Length: 310
Image (cartoon, rainbow, N blue to C red):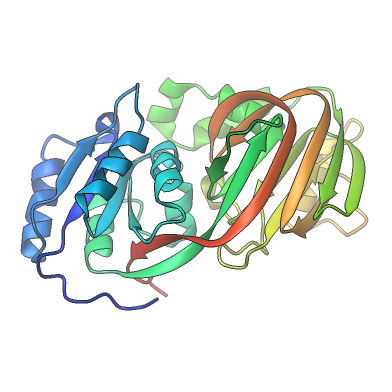
């Protein structure tokens, strides 16, 4: 990371999902935090159902602030990042959601929003990879920062009970995962870097830019968000006890001959499915897809934060 110049007269913009605000005093507390750090009064921009953050991020860019802080869950982070990726503007994180996946992978404090805010104000800048996704040959690209998935994992995201999630947090995804265990595999062709085609019957294909997913489980142990490489995981349980083999493979107790879990890597991948399957980006359920193209954009997004504790 490279140190920033003096904080004097710097200004932050906060793109916040108001539903996720921790309490009524949070805005005032954040403004005071900025004042104590010698920063100017921040630009406070609330998302809406009609605009979950893209318009607000563009407004912040036009205002010429020094950092745009995404305050909310993973959906808010992904939306703000879609505007800032490829620019010189730094993004900060105020993790206010259930998963807070990017913040966890960056080693940020996800338990205290004001500590996270202080990390942004006193931090320095580093660059991370962004992954572009094209669904069903669309001309419109979407991005993700942590992971995407088709099949089983996306079905979990689409059927998690929101009330339960509010009560028990990420454990709500475990409950949904148990309910979604039954199901039929689908044929898939996965082509990596335009050369290596793999044909499998599978329940899920996951693409990772970071290592940790829900519950701090290290799904992609070799994944780094600065290496310009995508990590793919194919889950293909077979037989009555197939999911036990999947668990063994995911948690590192399986062997390379375990065909229930297979890993691949590359700079791009195309996933073609025999029938439409549910799809998610960074935990956002986005419907169904038959064709998915993903490619990494190295060092495309600037993150501002303090170095994580050792």
